[in-house]
Image (cartoon, rainbow, N blue to C red; front, side, top):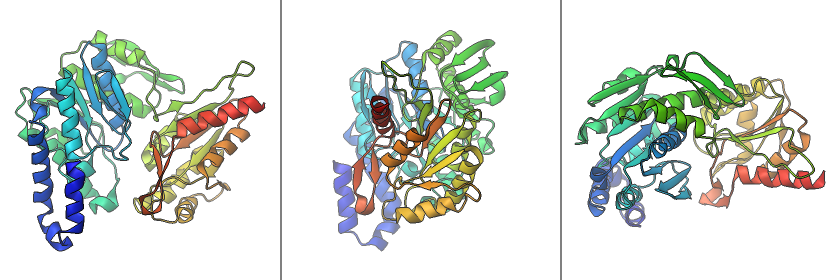
Length: 429
């Protein structure tokens, strides 16, 4: 791939000081070359982008479901997968927003397949590398913002500025009636609402009043009607409202939106319920996989399960980044979990035991179990589970690898491993 080839030249030939000086020009030029190579495909299809700290992938999936339900042919790109019409494949890049040539190629493939819309997850780190440039947007959805990737950006202010660059890029779009969809409940909403767009639409949790959040799903009001969603958690209610606002901006009716929401069942790796029933035995406890990897998202996820006895499998952040939040995640786990199993996640070049020690510092009363092998941790949680319990496996979601030292990677799936261990338990019982 040309992007990878040029990256090797950058690392091996160009002196670091010289590259750092010319870095913005380098990234901008690569983005332009990618757009030229694929003949500026975003000009030939409607493009919806989703940015924010949390909920991006889920919002992309819900938007896609609504537009498909309304009869549109769609494509998408997010942390979970890449999709063009009916063809879908998992995202194995370990990055939410692929490289410049990859994303432009995907848009071109969507155009060639006759797709009406493509929905793209756009990240702050992608913006640092100008991956958002030369993608002309029709709609931008802003979900929320909270501290993340601080090491990569240098400060929260820099992180926010990177997110805003995605919104400010709307100025370069020549699309007619550009729309920006903003979460009005977020403290930074005014900054995003100030970005250029013909339509400026806000949404708020008050738009869903009254609402009820249960483990089994959501009941809420939208457009004067009561809607039931199979998704659960306050965070998913926000994601639904964001997706509905994006659909409204494109003229999709309330009937089509509510029907799609009610028919939409789950999102891989996002409050994903793992159920293995055998002929002889029904699973009488819950096993749930979720991507929650920030303190705020972890707490909101745990809040869904306040009525059950919870066995929580918790890693830390990936090695070498966001070390500030490890103890905080341990504190949150102690607040909501009856049993805590600390395990390996994505240590990269950092000592995984050091990461676990950092998380453990936030746990002051409960005595956590430490099982470094992630499969063994899941197996032990299933072994301990009793009727009515919830096993909550967080941190990786649909991540396809456990990343180790020197960029080694072990193929992995929390959902698949949980399913395998549940099957083994069913056979043995």
